[in-house]
Image (tube, rainbow, N blue to C red; front, side, top):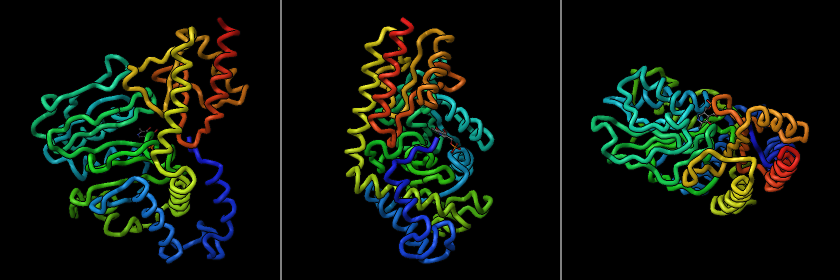
Length: 348
Ligand code: PLP
């Protein structure tokens, strides 16, 4: 679900009828107008500063969600093959698409343990003949997160950061491409952010025009009509993170404090447990179970009645999951813990 701070929503409301003195809503602007181009370029500049993105990386605002990247990546980059580390649903989907385009080598997988940990690999686990290594850095459904990037034997590294981008600083230079659907930490659904090393982008007239990264890079993400309002909202989010939060180091501290509270409580509780290997725990997604399916269902139902929505775990995992994205205030985590305590007392 989209998660946006009140600051961003209020700014958007204030500017709804008159964005940047243009006398109109961003939704009414031509994407070819200088007003909109300023919004787009302003968002890119903010993001470049915020994430410390070097000039040899291009920033693209695309459409089609994270899921279209599962196709565009192999279409554009898979020549000899790709190594993928399977850490759950979102790499399984990427693997399925990769297999349509060429050799897809599963370098490692945590499937046998229902994806409760991040497999640790060495260069020997990789196929020597592949073009890149593909990972999903934060596994939304299972609550696992790479704390260190895997070795990739000098190959390109492509990473899905859909559910952890902007939650903490990252060293962009360690990746050749990062992508993320906007709808968790960046802005409303409908925008897909791609940060890509410029030397990855090749002229590919053989590909469908819209599916070639070069099309979008050459046109500054304005080849066709982009999701203008979504890009504007992303720009407001970047402004908020830079000027109100004070940067990603501060965002990380806030996220670590929120997550620690919740994990500490779960670990101290007799009723709940978190199935994830401690060293691989996500800051964003915290799954937990009571160990009893009926009690889990009761929890989800009563939590909803208490105003705590979206706590049901993914259907492939069951139990509960708290998604504590950037915009979830600490009071939201406190309210969840209070509810969990009360539920534990009542159901001990
Ligand atoms: N990758 C990750 C890590 C996700 O969590 C999701 C959706 O939740 C996706 C990819 C798919 O994104 P989309 O729905 O934008 O296609």
